[in-house]
Length: 508
Image (cartoon, rainbow, N blue to C red; front, side, top):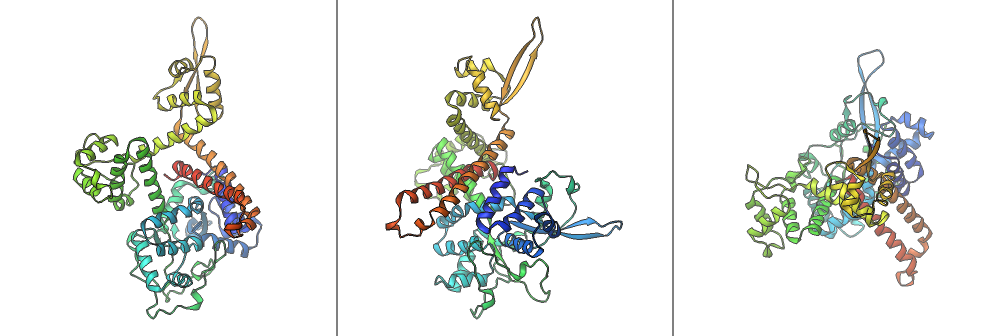
């Protein structure tokens, strides 16, 4: 379930990129769950044409997925297909991460691939003809586009677009019983899973790719628009279906799933580097790279198991292989929590454990800055404890004055950082003991909601500064006002850094 602050952030992103009309439609989908075209017209009080155009923009930019929901029709037993539209909250937030996605491809592939990906991020979905048309404006030929597309698809940074309107059976209890802004998880997963083609098709460039043999590009298919402009592709029309006799062109889009996986790997590696050493980070990086394809097949809490010899071979392929020996590899595996080999003679590293440690570090940092060192020591003690602790025990362990300990704990409890329980002791004289602990699942949700709010505030300020300083930003660099430009850059960097923490609690 997405919190109110999360919805506000998503609506702000859509407003910033596509305007108020599109954001209005998107907001109702986020708050009320999947809706039909007629329901959206009724809720938004917009015309049918305005809602259609808004849906086209959202579908084009991978923020909404259409599907046919089979329901029992009236008094008859026959099912009728009812087209509904689901807002994809994660994909909306991914729009904040486009610079990070481009940075990943910049490191892995060449600049032409970066330009091709940039076009897909800006326009959402493109055919190969449209990619060629866009590239030609930058002096790149069709052969270059073909080679770049092949590289991006092989690396799985680009994929074929999902089915336009998969048919979903009634897998969950009546949707009307769901709470407002709560889309049943089973339903959302089934919709997205049904729309995605199998990998053999999803990452295929050999069939119906749309490249012209005579290298002539149809003028009707070559129009490319900028960021935020509404693009109406024939294959996305809501009220028409393609002619079965005509072969539908392949639409391509950025594969957000692969980019988030890459960012997750990077976060794990950097956390290990910070907590342990470079050797452990090198080992983890080599293992994740060697098992990259296998990991995609299933969401794993640990890395894909590898034998010691396979790990050593993977390490030897890295640029740091000269400083690694078999003994050092074995020692680093022990550091990473793999002191013994499992029965099938392989090692596996707990990625979820690394992410949880990173979350703990993030929250401890917030507590230290917001509440001080005494609160930090108390919170750290409670987060590591496996049972409830009373106030006196916390005071004695953290060396905080007994008169100050309840005050600090009360502040943390009031702001939902710790959980409190009261225990009544019956005896000669009745007494009350306060017990404390950290409820991590609830705390993670609370921290995530705070991060949504903080990101929204920063993004709103950034949009305001951008609008206010637009004239400054358009001035030649040598004549620009240094303070305004630096302030803008600082805000951008702050949003990106805060988004790193947001992904830690939501996407990883």
